[in-house]
Image (cartoon, rainbow, N blue to C red; front, top):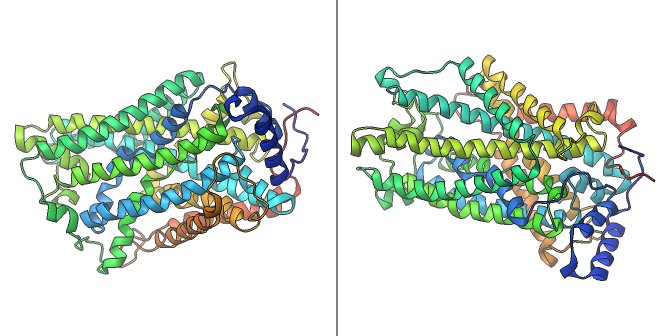
Amino acid sequence: MASHGVEFEDASSAADEYHLLHDGWGRDAITDASDDSRLKQLGYKQELRRSLSAIANFSVTFSIISVLTGLTTTYGTGLTYGGPLTMIYGWPFVGTMTMLVGLSMAEIFSAFPTYGGLYFWSAKLCGTEWGPLASWFTGWFNIVGQWAVTTSVDFSLAQLIQVIILLSTGGKNGGGYEASKYVVIGFHGGILLLHAIINSLPISVLSFFGQLAAAWNLVGVVVLMILIPCVAKERASAKFVFTYFNTDNGEGIDGRVYIFVLGLLMSQYTLTGYDASAHMTEETKNADKNGPKGIISSIGISIIFGWGYLVGITFAVTNIPYLLSDENDAAGYAIAEIFYLAFKGRYGSGVGGILCLGVVAVAIFFCGMSSVTSNSRMAYAFSRDGAMPYSSLWHQVNKHEVPINAVWLSAFISFCMALTSLGSIVAFDAMVSIATIGLYIAYALPIFFRVTLARKSFVPGPFNLGRYGVVVGWTAVLWVATISVLFSLPVAYPIKQETLNYTPVAVGGLFILTVCSWVFSARHWFRGPITNIDT
């Protein structure tokens, strides 16, 4: 693959060529050929098979957001910090702010439909002088954040499998089997291995799995949000679900505003990963339209179904302290205990609840699978532009036009990140905290450049926000800045080694490493995105 270091045209001239191309051919004739032509204008040749439809692109992103994954695994956090009120009202609030971030990203995406996504956007929006630096920072925060997401998702599945086994063997109070941390990391490694194998298959197979995953998530949410409260013999009142605010968190935090803010982490952790639509660009037909649709629709549908899931499950909550107690049968896994008790209370056996947890486990598996897909495409693009060590190795594609080496690299790094759990769960939590804050910083950087440096020069693609673009962009940037501060605050008092929030340490560490690598090395050779078209 040739990499000549040829600079791209600036953002405005690229967009002008783009509009000339489309105006000349007509909107109804935007085919694979026009996708490939646009990609060439941006400096790349088509190397992967472009076969994904709008639905397929949406499916990958929707499966990564996966409300069944995020809300199930962090439901205990929501109960702890504010309970029903924080979850029921915090979710639509965070969802609205997330939609603004997604809209701003979709607008930029439509103008620059390439695999590189966020780091490519930053480079083009900042121009030749600041583009390489902006691209370097955005790219590394994006890819490390993605690896952290995969680590977090697959580790949460390993933990859920542990809980399913525990409940299936009698529960904690019935002598059930509690897997050690070494068994859990073994589960994690096995899950990643399966995800790497599946992602080594042709994109047509991945597209099928992606659409199956989206359907599973939608149907699973609807079934569980209706089934669980209907089965439960004891149900909460509507007043409890919509007005009760839990201040008994056991973490030494009393301020209501502070508690509410910490409870928002559940929602924001779930609503992330939607940059996947951008990383599937070069395999998506009519990418400049279908990609933005993938981002916006996946966020919007997740907000609606996620809220229904929260309302439905919370109607089955009657004793918050017991659900959060390490002494219950699920060893403190709140939503697992809710499912288990619902069926045990009505039928005398919790088997039905365990089967419901299996539905969630499959959704988490699909989420991790799609996450590896997104990771590998980002690694492929970043290495194609020479930003990663041994870049020539990671952007190779196999006979099925799959970036095979990038797939296995992403799985391996995610496994290595999870190994920190063997030494300290605190260290592991710090590592995966990058999944939310680090990734959102990567989301905010190109939006910030679009509303500042490129405010006048930015020429949008088919999808654009018109005169509202700058206002929406600034709101999105301010929201990311706000959550970056709020989610770095202590989550328990008094502050000790076990209770310290290590998020600022992890994100700060990534920032320092990125700065040092730029100052001492990358600034001498990294020039941002480079063409791979022979000249």
